[in-house]
Length: 282
Image (cartoon, rainbow, N blue to C red; front, top):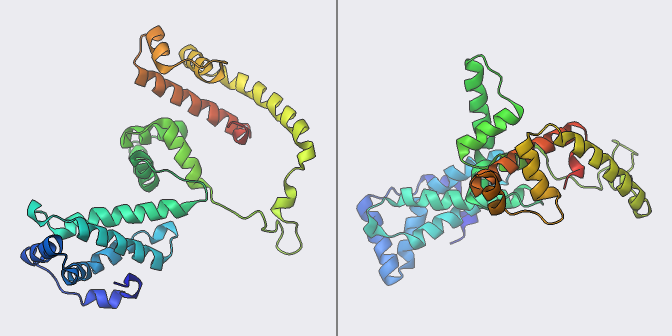
């Protein structure tokens, strides 16, 4: 079926199926490979797919692409639906349509892969909403929630690490841009012309390394002794320590060591960014 030709107007005239009719069509497809039954089931719920696709327009994706992705998710749902489980097809289809749309948005958000795990997807689609809600709740109590405190609250709310929140926030703040765009409106040079020549790289690299070491040393001084010890052992040593060995030394679980390390790295990154050196910390 040509999904791109299935317009919104036609979807509004599609039939409404009862639970019994859904089951009959689903069994006809599952047991007998009846493509006409499959087509009828898909067409009946295409309005649902289009409605869900429209909600993803805020991510800047093309409407036609979203509609097609939603249709693909709907078709996957129809092919896998088991009518004997007692679940309405619309409920089952929503999961597949949403998953298809989320994957499409994340694939096309940036040339840099945004994430693929469940936690990363949750962050991508919920970070700004959760930040706004937590900020409003804090303001209602006469408090100001921002910066690292806000990131920690979001991490706890969504059940992810602080470092994941910091990473996703940075990616959502930026966007891809062509190096061939002119700096000025008319005769300005292109941004690619501002890149340093390869011949300057050794000198620039040495200078950046010295500056970074000095700022990193200063930033480490703001960590607690335990945080500084863990970061030094995990990130700065020639032979990095394992989470297990540090946990045994400090009497902490491996997961707790990981959490302390993530929080400490977030503090370091924040201070380096404030010093204008965030891009030097790889």
